[in-house]
Image (cartoon, rainbow, N blue to C red; front, side):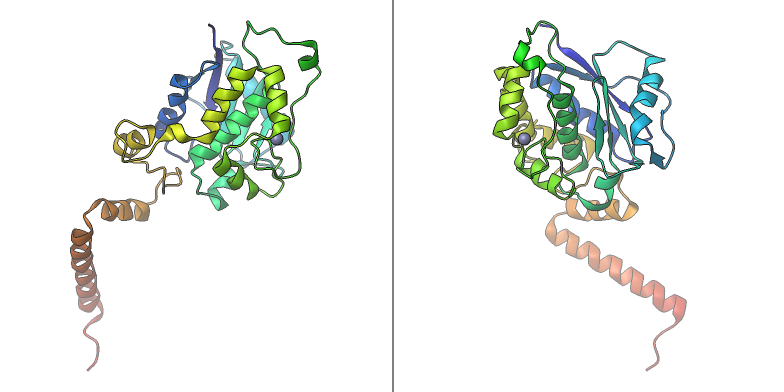
Length: 274
Ligand SMILES: [Zn+2]
């Protein structure tokens, strides 16, 4: 069976661990039969502005990508700058663009990776791209999948209040109205595999050898239970080193560090007056 080729392009320089994210996302190629996800090898980025114009962004990304390749069925772009409105993403027939900007400031956890998973799947559902050999009924051709403004915990909630997206990601739920539309357009199997993916049990946990969570932690140093996914500051890296030590050793190391700091300040500023 021919899968749909979905290319994921970094529209601007990622402010997150892109290798860990690639591993996380490409794990989906083993879990479902609709999409073959891939990351094309581009040297440059289509966006460098601080604010991206929502209306023209998709055309800009498509022009950029089509200069190098047209070998894809659907295009997903990930940018770090914010849109000139309140949206997380813009999904159109041929491409979608998702920004990491709002997530960065307010929302982790869930991690950025889970936010991107949720958003990409929402865009793919909105795209209504089906497998080439699928017969689409006349009824399905009349359906235009969109969002609903009430919050149902559904992948396709509109989430004007952006905090509601945390609920949607945590739940991994598809409401009955969307289930019915998805079955009509994509079929039962697609609904089954998409539900499994959105529920995120496939990520596993860091104690379970060779699970996605285990490999993220041990190969890419990304703990999906507590790291946001964004690039770590030096303070994050120091904290990580302490967490990796056994608890009693952490206490000893902390004592040594505090003693060293105290000594430094006493030498620099002199002993306190008696
Ligand atoms: Zn829904």
